[in-house]
Structures are given as structure tokens and as C-alpha cells.
Image 1 (tube, one colour):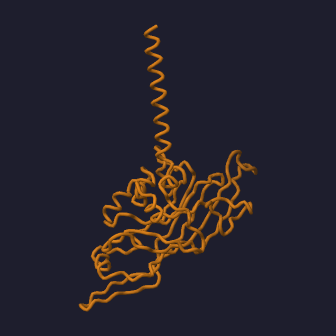
Image 2 (image 1 turned 180 degrees about the vertical axis):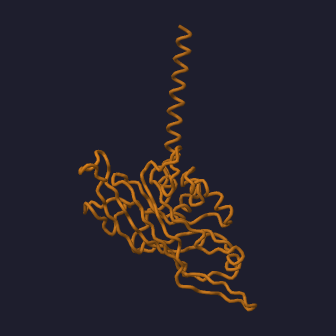
Length: 265
């Protein structure tokens, strides 16, 4: 009888530990809303994005908006003249994002950029993330076997500089920079998948090497968004300033096309 009771107690302990682990794991991956990210990145409207830039204390403010947006639903691939059973149709969304810093950099900041060969755009990231888990969808490494099991694919252009400007010192030193940058993303995902989020994000770390080392795990798909410098743990207010998202969802007003504001607020 005592042996039976000990075995029963052991089984109860294992179940409780398993349940506790599941609860902890779920809490750890309740990512974007939990950490305080803003969902205010819309087509045609400028949003203020904060980021840390070298040569300046505190956060700097830049601005971003979606200037072009289009999307379409494509039927599932057909086999033998009929759609494959259980296969979802695919959504394809294209968006162009513009970022600008209308404020002229101080000479202290400009010298930092000259020495590093970088610009303010290097302290901003466009990310594609799962709304609930915080997984990086712009990588194949979202599962242990190296596959993106959400079925999301992302292609994007490099940043293109617009509105070239320059600062000139009395010794002849010249700092050339761009006021604005643009890039285009094309995102494909199953129409049944409702958690594709696109964000424009600053960083709370101004040291470029430290920032890139910190973000490497997220970029490669081994950690989640809350483990990046785009989230200030313990400060939802600062995270809301750093990270701004839209949640792409099929429009209820059309079967094939998205409208101009297809996002979940």
C-alpha cells in the first residue's frame, strides 16, 4: 500500500511539473502583445519610431510609413484538374516601406557615422514575425529540422537612399547621407494563417557590434522577437516606442484582394 502511494505521489508530481512547464513555455511565447509592441503601422500614415543612435544620449525619433500596398489570394495548386484536398490558397502581399529622418544629424553623430561607415538606417530593422510566438518568419530556421512550418516566405530589396545631403567641416571633411530610405517586401503565406506581422523597429542599443550580436539569434531563427534589441524588457513603454507592427489579414470585404487597410488593430 505504501509503495502504491509513493508511486501515485510520483505520478502526480510528474504531471504537475509537466503542466507547469507547459504554462511557462506558453507565457514565454505570448510575444508581441505581451512585450508591449505597438500595432499602429498603417498604409499612408507616418508613425514615429524611436531608436538609439551613436553620439546621442537617449532615443532619437525617425518616421516610417507604408507608401505602397497590394495583395492577392491565389487558389491552391491543382492536381489532376482539381485543387489538392486540404491545401490552402496562398496570399501574396507586396508593400513598400519608407523611412526618413528629417532632422539634420549633429556633427558629433556625423563623426560617429563617418568612423563606422554606417548611417541611421543601420539602427532600424524591418521584421516579419508571428504575432503569438514572436518567431522570425523571414528565415527557414523556425523549427528544429530547419523548415519554416508556417509556410511563410519573404523576399525583400535592400534599402535605397533618397534625398542625398551632406555636412561639411572647415577642415574639408564631408559627411554624405540620405534623408530618406525605401525598401519593398513581398510576403507569401497560406490564407488560413492569420498571424503574419510586419514591423519597423528601432533598437535600445547604440553600439552596432553589440546590437548585431544580440540580434543574431533572432535573425537566424533560433530565438524569438522578445530576445532582440527591439524589445526593452521591463519597459513596455519603451518597447512601444521602438517597435511598430501591422498584422496582415485577408479583407472581409473581398474574396481575392486586400483593401487599403487590411490590418488587425
